[in-house]
Amino acid sequence: MKLTILGCYAATPRTLTNPTSQVLEIRNQMFLIDCGEGTQVQLRKHKIKFSKINHIFISHLHGDHFFGLPGLISTFRLLGRDKELHVYGPKGIKEAITLLLKLGDSWTNYPLYFHELTSKSSEIVYENDKLSVKTIPLSHRVYTNGFLFKEKLGERKLNIDSVSEYGINKAYFQNIKNGKDVVLDNGETIANSLLSFDPPKSKSYAFCSDTAYKPDIIPIISGVDMLYHESTFLESEVHLAEKTKHATARQAAQIAKDANIGTLVLGHYSTRYKSISLFKEEAKDIFKNVELADDGKTFEF
Amino acid sequence: MKLTILGCYAATPRTLTNPTSQVLEIRNQMFLIDCGEGTQVQLRKHKIKFSKINHIFISHLHGDHFFGLPGLISTFRLLGRDKELHVYGPKGIKEAITLLLKLGDSWTNYPLYFHELTSKSSEIVYENDKLSVKTIPLSHRVYTNGFLFKEKLGERKLNIDSVSEYGINKAYFQNIKNGKDVVLDNGETIANSLLSFDPPKSKSYAFCSDTAYKPDIIPIISGVDMLYHESTFLESEVHLAEKTKHATARQAAQIAKDANIGTLVLGHYSTRYKSISLFKEEAKDIFKNVELADDGKTFEF
Image 1 (spheres, rainbow over the protein chains, first blue to last red):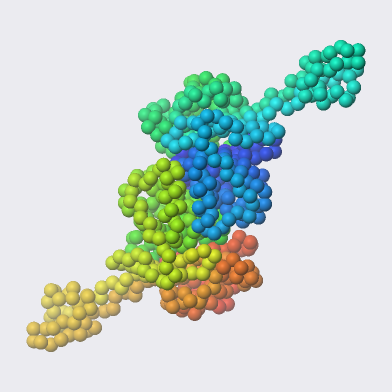
Image 2: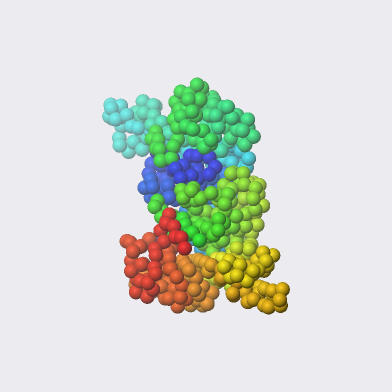
């Protein structure tokens, strides 16, 4: 998986900082997560092909997470797109985008599907043979979901030496990869575990923004390789975090620790702080593997 | 008047080019004209104080002319604005902005007034003691208005020498400035023209984008000091201009010539052309005083 941060600052776009948007690449598929104002310019800047984006996931309907979406959808049209585009986001997103297109008398020339989310429980919203995307219900001022991207386990790997030792015919290989035991001509059953190795561990990524400190999400994100968790504030402003339903760097780290995840990526910084390194310092006291998101930064895992 | 071009390229925002938006400063008042995606970042970049903007004029509801408006309105809230904001634009703009704010449960903390336009005739939409703003009905794929900003004539200037020669009392000065004659104690009437000079010529600016070639606008913009007229295409693509209801550089120059205006500023360039200087070359054959808009450029007149 490769994560590209297009924008990771709270609230207002500025000359050098962008509101939330990121692209997750999994096995050559691109997923856009959130789409603050200016996202299409950030996509160009980081040379991400517009045509590779077929699925867009919107966490919630605050401007800094979706005001770039109408423009991006319009630009897809101008670029002559014909492939389907699927947008997943809170109920209301369809009405908003449809109204904006209608006012401009500018409908898409490609199929545009909205998948409106209303559930307060975690649910799978997208799935193909390689991965699934599940919502992570968050706690913010409006209905908000994070998203869990999880690769599916691939096939088991043949143990070539063992298979040849048992003299097993090629015709059985696919069954072995699928986890089945083999019954030899003499009636003997060879356990699958003797003939194959576990598939490579599947990777997973959890995006959690915006949210108050919410330990309920721990079972959903438990053990993910990478967690992006918002840290709008430092603990010194925890009263503001509580008031605005955001989290502090310390709270993000506590979630990372309790969910036993791999690497924590912090983001959604308030621009009130002089340096984003303060967020890392605070989080490191609780959880070791902390990285700072920044516009244009990529993470491969 | 001082015009700052925040963006003047057609269609899609790119890394180095912005969609339509400009700021007109008249006697220390700022007027924002159109608001493509990224306008708030452009305002910051060019150090224009957000608090000075109280009136926004939107020509039409295509994304490249108003998708930056919801974000700007939200940012005003985040900055703690309390002054009124007035938005002038086609019918539908209120519903669109209101829906977006409603979805985010983020109402403004300042009074926001929409002035929805529907008339197909030129009309005054804003007026104070220093200037008026009048619509210029344009011809585009959706309902579109340009805007004519016209300073009001100031008071006449006292002819100090003449006033003192006639021995006129100070009490009459305001009447003289207002254009009135003076009757002396001996019954003699002194014509105002002997006691005062004409006020300085009032300046005017016309913004015309987006539009097909439309000679109907000539009487409305006749004699303006500066005309911004779109030139999406060159004459070699006049068939595209006709099809999409845009104008060519040559057509813009023809309008400028026929309306006997001061300076023509071209803009709203299609990004298909290698150099915007081609637009100037084409227009110069018809009309001499041609300038090219470009993002960040300012014009004082």
